[in-house]
Image (cartoon, rainbow, N blue to C red; front, side, top):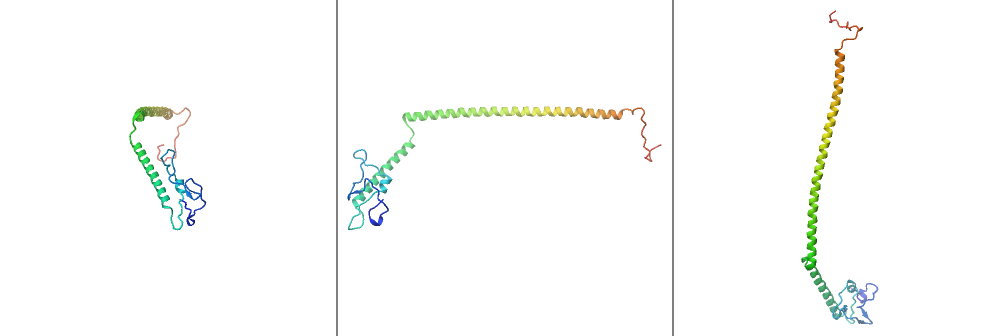
Length: 189
């Protein structure tokens, strides 16, 4: 709130519709768009409100201040009423076509949600079955590969052992003398 008193001057005065014009204050409150209705106060209106400083005594014109405060009271009262009405409207269940539309939308949303849950459960089951089948196929492939490796190594080992056994059991080739060890003193001559 700006005042014209020299001790409280807060800078340049901005022109406003409800300030003093030529020494005569514009009456408060300001008329609204509808006859008999007052315009609600705005923050700039409150900020720029100027009261006439009464000369010969300190203070402001009490009638101006009282009129302004009445306007503030009216504005705040209307705003509180609007707030209360809007809060009640938000908390009340919708009615009429709006309520039916919302109820239909809620039913449709629940139907879609149920279908989504069913699809998700079905897909989960299919994925689990596919994962089990893949795991079983992988286990089977590993077993078959191990069997193949064991069989191959078994054959190779069998062939190697057979060859060694054949070498050990075969008579020495002709023309080769038996090897005697003469180094062993305990060996019979």
